[in-house]
Length: 445
Image (spheres, rainbow, N blue to C red):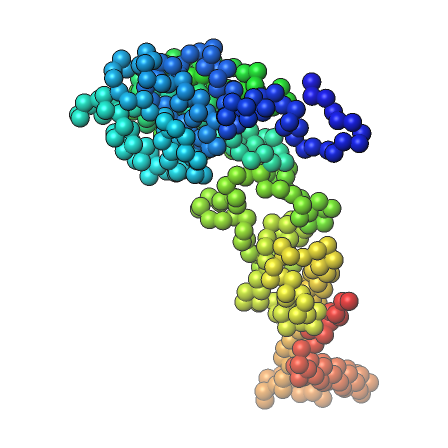
């Protein structure tokens, strides 16, 4: 148990000076305490001493390469029983400081270019195989201690870790000889059994191990996969994370780590991805730039969610005329241009502007309905007041039975004429006005 310091001692974040393996690594010249994990695993399974060539994926800073170089030394049993030169090859995205008897490569193990460089290095260094026998230009052991940057959600971290394992296995199948050994780190998660199933298809024996150097608080364990079957062909879907792992689990983890713009922790969340921004289905940057439209924001049922997901609102063609209204100030336009720099007050202002735009849409619709009804009434009245042609009906004197009925008819006609003239006057005044709907919403402060 690590003892805590006295109340007056300065707080330490990781207590490295109190860790036994950390101190041993510094005393014995290892670059990381993880070197003792490999030492303890090899002490149990004894695969490094019988190897002529070792490939270490995600090797930086080089602790496992140091162990492999000391264990796979000349004079050992030799995995192929030949006099080939011993080779330890470390590959990582980051450059690694030189280590004696270790060849370092800088590259991405998921790319074909990196696999070509590994094959070329093996062809130069492994001199025991004949010129035509390229199957023997392979390694005896493949190691992988890669891990993602720890983020806010364990489900996502475990998914990314298992994805690294699967990508490392894809690289290992191209360079591991028949009967070889693959050692990797794994996190327990929902995809654990799917990954174990794939290992069982490619190796005769898979043994989980938790070395003493691995902290008990850590969720990591290690798999020692022995006796590689080296099949002639492998289905690409067997080594594709999109086909093997549960994508819904990752989507749920990302949803749990999303904080809306009005949350007190907005802007403080960490990015758990070790590769920076996430990519969408087309391989484009899905987090850095995602632009919505102002019309979609105004009519959306989830405006807060849109402000959280989008980085900007574009007015586009502005068919609704939002940008010409009095409520759409220069400040609103600037806020819509970049949502990532706004604070809670700015987001509240956008919500008030959205309410004003919804009111504008409502009043515009009402005015259009009134105009339609007025035009229909005028058309009907014009049709009813149209003079009749000669001979179209009987004589007026004969159709009226009495003077009172004739007078009453004249009064109704005069009333209808006055109403018709009033509607026409109102319509002309509305047409002459600049934009009566634009003055409806008032500017908010």
